[in-house]
Length: 71
Image 1 (cartoon, rainbow, N blue to C red):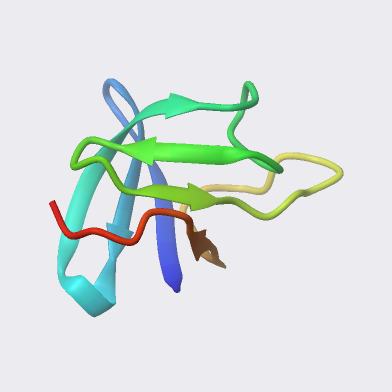
Image 2: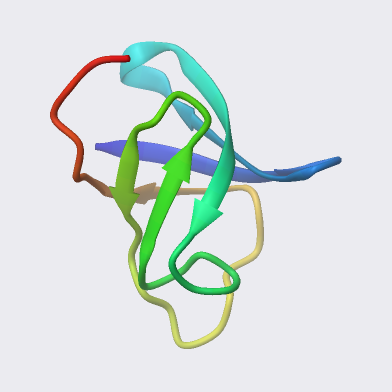
């Protein structure tokens, strides 16, 4: 699923265009988010791609959604 990641005043923000959903990132497996999972404010969890160096934001990435329920 395509997810746009940007940085807001309180941390990372994710926008999922397919669902017209914008939510803050409330938890991350790894500092800086890349290469682990990221949990959004609505409970969705995405597996984020790994990068050797953190990419410039905003960036649109292909992330796999690990949760299967709509909240």
